[in-house]
Each structure stands twice: as C-alpha cells, then as structure tokens.
Image: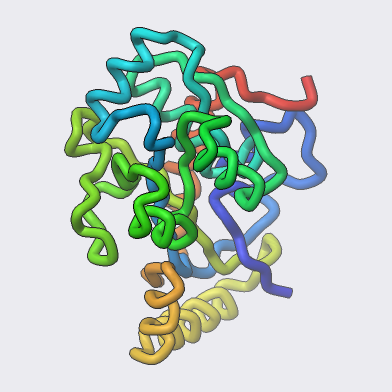
Length: 237
C-alpha cells in the first residue's frame, strides 16, 4: 500500500495534536518527494498596503485588529501565517475556515484582512486586481508570477513555507522495494509530459532520494513544531 504524504500529515500534525493514532515519522517509509506548490500572501485592497513593510507597520500600529484567514487550523496556510507573525514581530488574529472556498470571498469583501493561499488558486484574483499580492513564500521568485517579490527579500530572510507532497509506504518496507519504488517515481516525474502537466497545474515536481525526503521531513517537523509552540496552536488540550 502506498499513500501521498503532505507537510500537514508528516510535519505539522504531530505538533498540533496531543494524541494521534499513528506516528507521522516512525510509522512510514519515505519513498520520494513528489512536488510542491508555493503559497502567496494576499491582502484586501482596502488596507492600502502594497508591500510587506507597509503591512507590518500597519499591524504594529493596530495590534490584534488585523486578521488572517486560513483553510483550517494546522494547515500549511495557517502555519504560514503563524510563521509570518513570529518573524515580523506582529499580532494578527487567525480566522480558520473549513476550506479556502469560504475564505476568499471574505478577503475580497474585507471581512478578513489577509490570507495565505496557494498561488495557483489565487493567481486569477491577483491578475484581475481583486486582491493585492504582497509576497510569495518561496526563497526565490516564481516564473509564473515573477513580478511578486518573496517575503524573504522584503526583510524576512529565510522565510519559506510551501505545501508539499511525497510518496510514502508503511514502516519496515524492505530496502530493495524502497529503492525500486524510488527509481520508478523519479523516472516518471522526470518525463517531460508529466512535468509539464504538473507545472501547468501549479505544482513543481522535484523527485529525489528517499534519504533526501527523510531529511526534509525531519527538518520540517522541527521547524513547524517550534512555530506551533510559539503560536500556542495546539489542539486536544
């Protein structure tokens, strides 16, 4: 049995939830990283800010008066906001939704101030001028929206928060099967047609070794655990 792993399942939920029916690291065998999708910080245009510096100044002038939405507690979009709060040294209130479909209309109408969203999901709104994009959450600018600067280049060095997907198997998978599955996955994702389809859908394929994936999960788990502690976002308390 194989399954798709995510940053939420394998790097965030273990810190968010006090009790889980499985161990997100020990109960799985990493096969390969699959793809990632960048997030973007978008704000209601009535805020009158056009860059991160202006937003931070406004948030400091109005502590806890600005709000940011997400697609739910513990999602990568929620954690993007919490990391932003921590690195910018500001206080903004989190408004969780049951999904991004409900949050975007509230952002456009001004019921919430800002939102971290997958770039592929919000790009049409950005291009149409219905929301203001302030920065992407990757370390480098993106070809699909090269005019949008990164948060890192706007005074938050090292800021990175992306949604990612991986191929996982149950724990104790024989090494020779793990190796073969990794080879097949990398071969498939490196096919030009497959890559172009994923890129067109807003996903950036980047298959690697099983060891690379294991290191990523360990790194991301430590990173988001620290953010969860700082934000007091734990559930089941």
